[in-house]
Image 1 (spheres, rainbow, N blue to C red):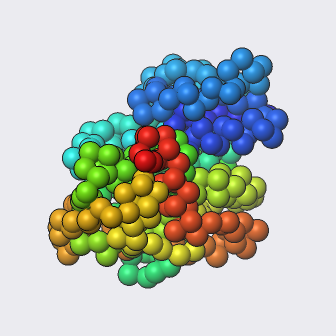
Image 2 (image 1 turned 45 degrees about the vertical axis):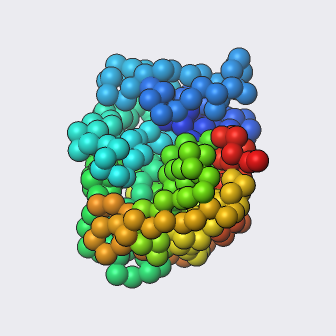
Image 3 (image 1 turned 135 degrees about the vertical axis):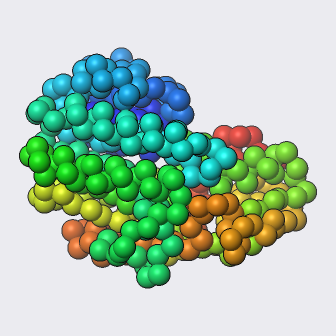
Length: 318
């Protein structure tokens, strides 16, 4: 079948493209390359089964052309930044909410059978139940990023119900792995390159969250997409957590600076790294486990593998 991957030149999207191509599908990628890179798709250039469209979901004509003839759509495109100083409210509205609306309008009346959407654990806000199940509520995001993802979920659910296609929504933990170019591991590695003797950690260091390797993430995407429900919502994460201080130690060793001194900023709002930072996050995985998916890597293993890869890519190993 022909499958569209929005944001397919990005971190998660490109790994998904690799898997879909390896399984023999015809894959079309729509990406504006704002954060993605054609280098992530280099191996598929020239393949008759691969098509790349450089364009923005906000362009309705381009989006309709990208959707045309596709049986499935994996919607990975978004502004990925949670921190307020890296993305404005308008960024989240346009690149997450409005872009998703544009895609849904293109899907409405098309021959698309399934829409798979990469949402986020941030829709839960400061959950009082850990691990957090999919039926937890009320959903009260504390970041604009989380709010924009929740708005997208609501639109997707309504469009799927009204216009007859299936939707599978994944609430993702922190996804890490090769090709990642933002997030705590990337930031720590960059800081160590600038100052090998000191590693600044935002917050009080006790923040504790789940991290999932991108290979496990892609496997989960494909397994949940087999669901026959009109709208299915799955958590997608590891089954444990790791603290920011533990991540700092892992990155220090991977980057070749094990003796760097960790300096805590203290953070805001009770030790958070920034406004809108969910301090504790772990997702309940019983739904995906019930249909046969299990993560192969723990949070610490996923962080270590990623830190070693990032250190190599950025030339940090001595």
